[in-house]
Length: 401
Image (tube, rainbow, N blue to C red):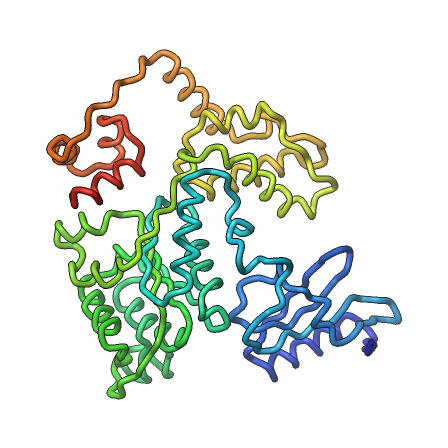
């Protein structure tokens, strides 16, 4: 094996910086695996390195001041990576779950990934919609091309238009150079538009044109650019309802909603919480003196909590608990956020004192009437009808409400 010697860490850093300048399509990441340290140059389109056999890409052993500093790896622009085991066939390795609702979603995802049709991912905030979008890309035909994500709610209309379609120099005040939009940068890859319901109507018309023709013109430009991207969108809103209220175009809705995927909320798959918790703790406990175990009483609290923030909230809760239990061998209920304990206690007390409401016999007329009465407030509708969000979604889809 080739060996490279550096006088100090600064000279090694200079080397990696210069290599990135000369190879601007690559990124650099320090990766620790099996007590070995790898310094990996890899294509920017790759989302992670956890399942790549890094040993196959070692170019040299690095020594600094005659001490072994790790291995230098270079992953070239290639059409197929050497993955561990059968990861490209088994999505469950990426989405930790043992619930039947998630299994249904996995089965849809496997089939969807093989196509290039537009996908609309529905689900609550924090449920993992972007992760689903990444897997659609990663397991599809375009996995070795760019995956670019844009949150439509994070930018105002003018900035969002520039980010989507790009602009030419002088297109507006402050446009001091040409800027490529994501439709151009994601060519031959996947473009993920998160919070698509927040897209202004003016930009909805422009997005529809790109989907229909595969062409667009940068802001202030005259040259038409051809693009070939797979569109994956996500929202926590009901787009049909947005369209009925005039906030979303019906024609765009039908273009985007070719294949809908619904991500169940965490409260409807609480059996997954121990698996998710173990994975999160394992991932983030690396910098701690020891990896603590979770006391069973903690899972009892988790079971009685509704998790409105879904997996994102679970992750943040565990990171808080991990910090509070620093140096300990066990995470207990004393390490949990106080507001979660109080909310969990309130929910448990309420459930024990309240007689379960009998579910009404569902009909299209009853559902329409309830939605009108609640002014289409989903939480009020669920409570009034005593049904789950996924059940409500199925009935609305069945009766097109």
